[in-house]
Each structure stands twice: as structure tokens, then as C-alpha cells.
Length: 79
Image (cartoon, rainbow, N blue to C red; front, side):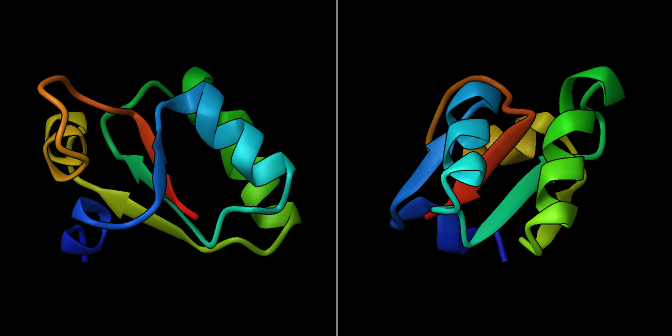
């Protein structure tokens, strides 16, 4: 499932992903299970409200790697 992030149009990080969800440009949101709930709580609510599917990834490190970045990522979204 994460392979789709490698070569797709995406946003990485909470701020950019929030903008995409608010603008209804996000098709799917990826959230790391080990991300702090205070950080990802608002984007989860927005996804549910706007019927945007959420895919949970085990770790921030895995999500970062799938997005071709060298650090962990709490949130990424497919545009």
C-alpha cells in the first residue's frame, strides 16, 4: 500500500496535508500509528468529516521512507 506514495503526487507532513484535506484535494491520508495523538487528532477528524479514507502505517519512520525522505513523517496524503 505504501508503494503508491513513492511516485505519486503527494504532500508530506501535517501542515501541508491539513491544507490538502481542507481544500478537499486529498484522496487518501496516511497516518503513522506512533504519531502523537495531539498532533494527528485534528486531521483525523477532518478526514472523517470529509469522507477521506485514512490508512494507518505502523511507524513514522516507515511513512517517511515511503515518501522518500530521510526522517519520519506523522502524516502524508495522496493528491
